[in-house]
Length: 184
Image (cartoon, rainbow, N blue to C red; front, top):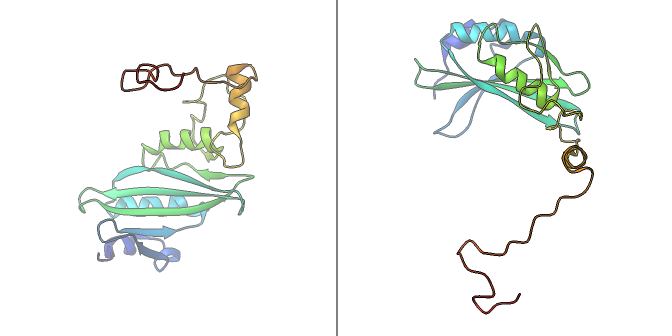
């Protein structure tokens, strides 16, 4: 894989030498690690370089390091699916970053999910809310690694009692153990 010279030219000077090529022969991508405050400076440069297809935002939780890593995945249809990954880290105790939805509109919904499931807040995003979780969810963001959602779910849906599955009387093959001469 060759370096996309157009992309490197358009990046802010601060990041022109801070990229790497990662992955295997079949899935190589350009990765750029940035400071969170520079997101809205780097994303327009990437879009201007022809990376027009926003794939999504991945949030990775590192509770031992007390950070969330956000990975923005963007590819280019005109460049045969060439992929760029923008990485940035936020502190877990105050995870705030600017919204990318003004640059890539699909980021709007990805940011709602990151807010709902991890508690990441996006400055200037006008729709951060519960979208997938039920309205009665009272616990902390459920995808954080230090949150044990089992207790919350037990209290919310099962009155604090442990749910036991009913005993399965028939196997998937359509006969019971008794029919085959097995134990009761």
